[in-house]
Length: 180
Image (cartoon, rainbow, N blue to C red; front, top):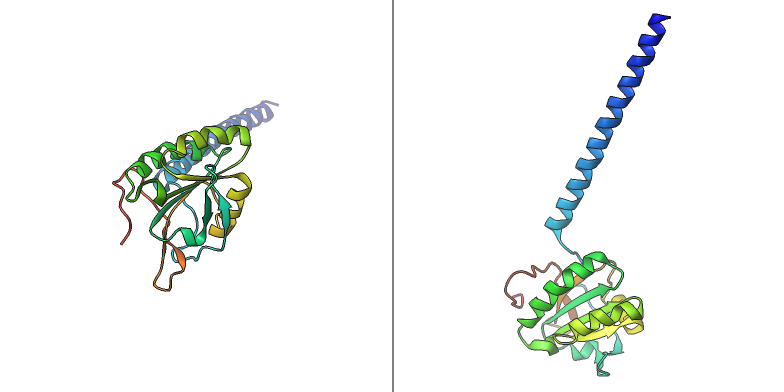
């Protein structure tokens, strides 16, 4: 009987130790995932040189906007009102857009999501960008082939006058310049 009790106590202690180690590993994995996310930053997953599809939309200021109207280097940001990283990235995007060469006419912000929550995004973005929302925003997300939010891009006409992605990784803390 004492052998059986010793075996059960040993097995119980072994299981508790295993559980403690598992909790430590999970905590460590979570920390690493957060560190990787902060290093990589937001990614649009849109490849460089990707041609932007046709679109015709209206901004929140009721101005028409089409692929042809983006005739120079343009900073583009895609945000969702339900996306936590979007809420963190947007103030940096606004600060970057304030210093962007060409001003408001060279900055496009697209916000999708619940109309009540989108209003806060619009108020902040419309000062520095042409803003498009919801149904028109979905059209733009399709035209730009956006698969993740937030997505931050530079787009510009190429040598054949096709509107293409010229940068898909933007360092928002650095001075605003258009890519070479």
